[in-house]
Length: 233
Image (tube, rainbow, N blue to C red; front, top):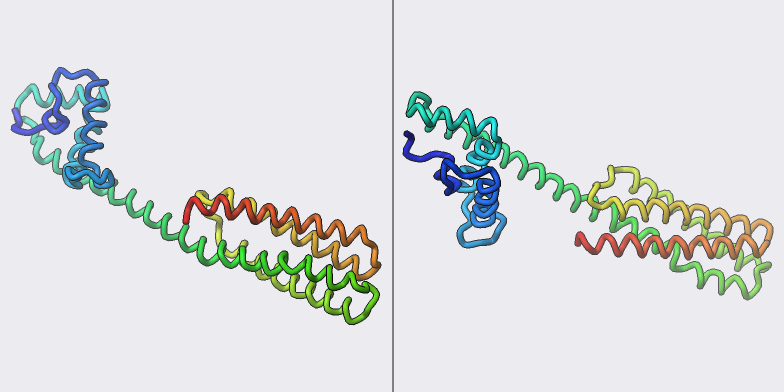
């Protein structure tokens, strides 16, 4: 019989039930997992525990393992255990690399897409009330109307920048709610600018009020995006 085996690693009897093996595995993972922040955290130990549970946690593989144990050392368990340990370690490292890559991309999207988008949307929405207030002194004054039209032209410029940023990189699944609110926000801003541009052509207050309402909706959607984003800062 081998000196050290999967049962010893999981600290259970060879007669242990499957629920007992599962319970022992969970207990040991909490105790030794590198991310547990416990003093007992041990990377090499958790790799051995994972390798042992891959065998004993599967009834069919456990039966084959028990048969091998029963005939003594006819099968080189030490070599096989080392192989399983190496395989488990490789899988663990692959998962960690994938998680790290996702974290890096999330940070990149947040800083290079989300932050500039919020700034551009604010540059469009925030001046609207003061622009309308200035224009209300005399909507038919050419100079006042020209100033308002310059504002709308800047809005178009900022909107095009925002749309390019939003489409330049795929949205991280973890920030799906943030991206969805930004998408709808940009649509409302686009429609709002169109309504305000129509007002500058025909002076119909309906277009002005509709544009204001669409900007209010965009402002709310931007706030929702910021609320969801705070959870990941």
